[in-house]
Image 1 (spheres, helix red, strand yellow):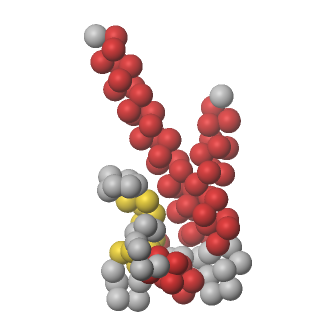
Image 2 (image 1 turned 120 degrees about the vertical axis):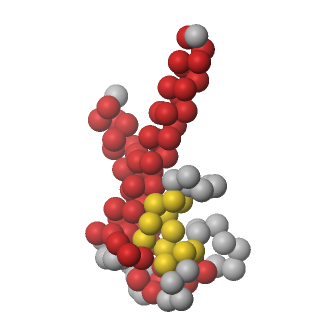
Length: 103
């Protein structure tokens, strides 16, 4: 019974960790890049978990597309690419901050 508790607890902790990571991308996208909430969405239960952006045709674009649509879509919100580094690093920044505070 203990092993089941540890396995379930581990998966829940991993899900929380991933959620904080994606929330970091989402937060930077919403408040620094100024992407409206209608055009950015956390997709936690898709593989891989990601933050999707809505393009001009109202399609949701994943960051791992091979044609580069995600980058082109991102650049419509941040044409000078001044905040792209923060958008990419937002996940690591927030998850590190949260888990350092918990530790």
